[in-house]
Length: 527
Image 1 (cartoon, helix red, strand yellow):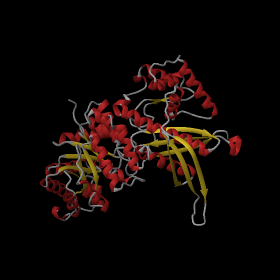
Image 2 (cartoon, helix red, strand yellow):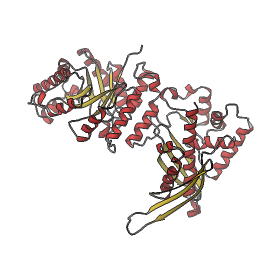
Image 3 (cartoon, helix red, strand yellow):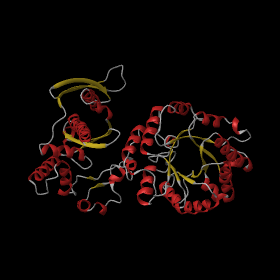
Image 4 (cartoon, helix red, strand yellow):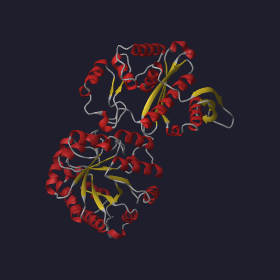
């Protein structure tokens, strides 16, 4: 049995400090549910002593049962010069009734004397008394030794004393924090190795990414003996962010031989990353290790040929192990091997030499000549293949649409409205919507009409919209290529449309996007 590494997620506390991230109470509950389903051990959900939103969240979450994770309330050691039971922050933590708590305290003499302005001796009492008090309340206590690595470099003896005080107070785990994110991997290994020899309770690691090394530092700490890893699920956090758990977990489990999650839970890694990004309104770049859309994407013809023969030739782990998928990108350098893999997803009996394969290739070449570019838009290619093979049944037909743009004296900006008429199995539906521009209005109106027949359409939202002029010499009559990226909180897919009319190009991509979603849902149900 592989040795267990406890995963401590701080997306809702440290991650919420990232620029551009703001969780509502509902958002926080949805993130907790997602992390719990994935098998995360600890979910640090906020500081009840710092703001009303966290207090409301902890009150709401009391009524929700978690199957695996321990919910964690965060706060600091008691303030200097007061009794531990009188500290308002600790009272707020206890009112949350969470089974676990994380308490930060100072381990760098500079912070003690110059920032919180107390004595070194009083700081040790603050740590020990806080740990002991929370243990009498039946809590699972993690002590976060803030700025530990800077403190150790400055005064190793005192930094160790701070940990010993927490250990003496009864802490269950001592998390060593690289709060400024400036420590290098070899330093992490040396310091954790030394600390481990001086303490009897488990160590944790909490790294920030200011030097771009948070993942590497976390792995080195585990290699040196840490058995709890803290981070945020997609690495966002204050300044340059925190250690990225979506990268750390598979490295620990698939490469270093530790156990973090059950195999079935590890296979939820990618879908969980997409869901948390959606909830956070955080745009994934696609290049995230393990969980990004491009993590297992292959474009070069020789690379594709090698991967088709043996995936290990250009993949360091199996994409299925982390719930991702291999993507063969359409491009001028990919070749027939690319097409045949996509064709075989629809009809495994076809080969490179089949007439149907030639027909699909010819159609793709024709569309590329018209201005289509299928790299990164393989969902459009999959639909095209089905159409060419006679295996596509449209889920709906757009019978008519109309857009109106106007700027009135009462409105500062141009507004648009759209009316659409669709047909599903002989039944017509007309709907209208307003939006920020004609494409947005069409998107809203189309979704409203389709939700009557396909309620799951409400899950889909556009996450990216790109327009490129193809032949600029034609001025306003130029063709445009529109790329639409969509997500339903589980998958991300991209579709392409081309026309001399930007609205028509957008509609082509938009309709393909919705068709692809409905096709995916149908295939899942059939499985």
